[in-house]
Image 1 (tube, helix red, strand yellow):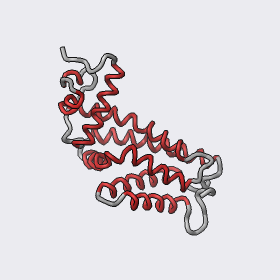
Image 2 (cartoon, helix red, strand yellow):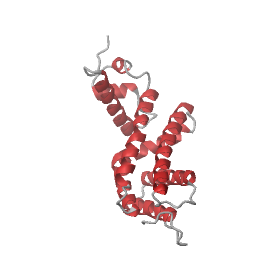
Image 3 (cartoon, rainbow, N blue to C red):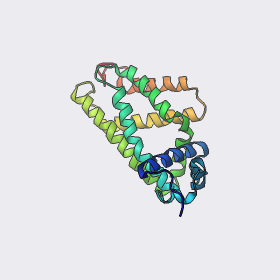
Image 4 (cartoon, helix red, strand yellow):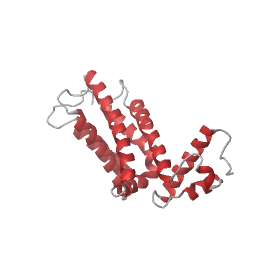
Length: 204
């Protein structure tokens, strides 16, 4: 019978997911295998199958945790007593700390999902959860009268997600982080502080 990773099931799952995340970051999604994850943990591959049926299932479980992490970053960064533009810089720094080491993996995943329906389903579900979190936050901002009532929040939500995904892409292709940070802040200003003086946010 294959050796179980640690003594307790939840601890085992956590250790497996941590190792899998490292392997995906090191080898990329396509090249990573269950054997690689087992080697990273120092256990037999059979032990992994007691918890996860496939590499795809492992990746899906990793994705499930990300919207919660995103929510924590979002709400801890954009507080009621903080200036949004300063918070946008802090948000960039926190996101980069969490995802910067695996930014190339994000790029690969998007490419792989274009011809992998299962992976595309996982990404769509994760993106929908990101969008719901962000839209809820913007709606709260509108109630506090810091987001303009005429803005289409759904459109703004996806514009911000697209902006961040684009920032990750240009970092992968070699743009220095400081230049990417400035691009993020300028994009944020363009959305929330138009030159015509009609402010999306009154506290910028």
